[in-house]
Image (tube, rainbow, N blue to C red; front, side, top):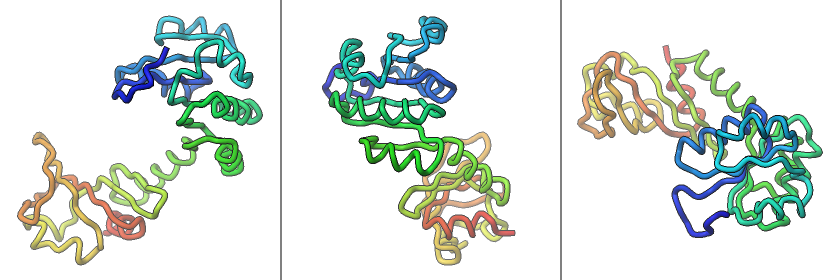
Length: 223
């Protein structure tokens, strides 16, 4: 069913059609990927029959059942099962046993995440926790959007500080003052501009800044 060759539209297996799994599957379809969507509930499968390339009802904790639906032909899978932790863990284990190389799995808490990693999940996502952290950063500072990486590095979209208005990036010295690098500038009604030392900043511009998490947070929390 799935082409093992590298492709930007490589098919993806999505297990669990709750809110998270369905959102991921629909987004993959919009991006041009074929999706095999799996859920143990036949009624849910029927509801999404016209939304995905293939939709089947199957017990994802059963390796033989997964092979029968062709899951072993996929390189990438997303496990959207959350509240049933036992099913989530057994599904990840089954997917790794049939040879799927990349397994993305949803976790509901840190302990669940650790178990998923131990049984073979290559990527673990805690969507509620991640979104909560992003919202907290945006509410308490000048951030418009925020992404933090595991190694203490962050990228943020933020409003221009007054000290940079009417100056070039070289003149404002934001890197020297705050330890962040301005990656790009977005002015309303204009295309995104990759930042250069001579890039001029105006009031109302949005900046894309990157750097150590603490420096980015301090920069975006400025008065």
